Length: 205
Image 1 (cartoon, rainbow, N blue to C red):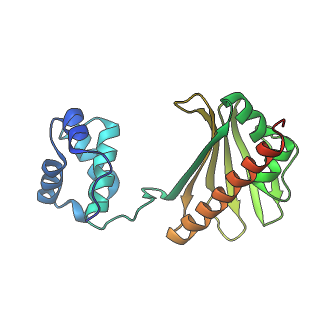
Image 2 (cartoon, one colour; image 1 turned 135 degrees about the vertical axis):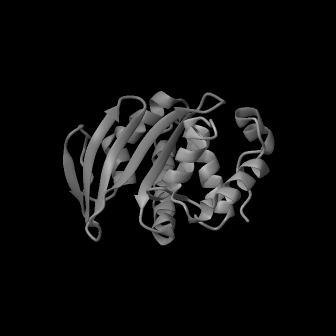
Image 3 (cartoon, rainbow, N blue to C red; image 1 turned 90 degrees about the vertical axis):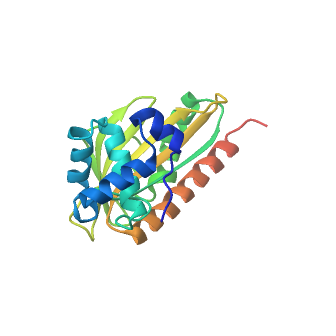
């Protein structure tokens, strides 16, 4: 049994009951044979749980009962990686969107700039659609491998850490399986290392 990531105190405070209560309720309902959508819908409409917590309880239950693997969501697998290494979020965004930065995290075939509504092909056999750009915040990409008909989603973002420094992160969604998730983990770990190397090289000495 995989323990829930959030504490009993957190779920008790938010829903009025601890994890065990919800797991017992779902077991009695026969939720192991239900879809993710139906479980979450029951929790929200019949048990009065808010939408966010209905999803969180459903995912925790599915993992605890072996219905879902780590990193698996209702629409496939996903992975998130982030690293804090810039003086502030503004510099993180500048690096992320620079020609050198784009080459570091997108790889060979990356454009010099990104423009919403455009698309391009990477040399590794990927079609990339630029779906949305929120300046200073995030970039949303459609990620289409030549070997798959289904579009994956990559979100690149910058944030301010609690210490005030700049953080760059990547979330890769709609992955087909656990192996693809591990490949994506390696890719974005390497991308963050490459971006950090550029930042170090550009730091005045």
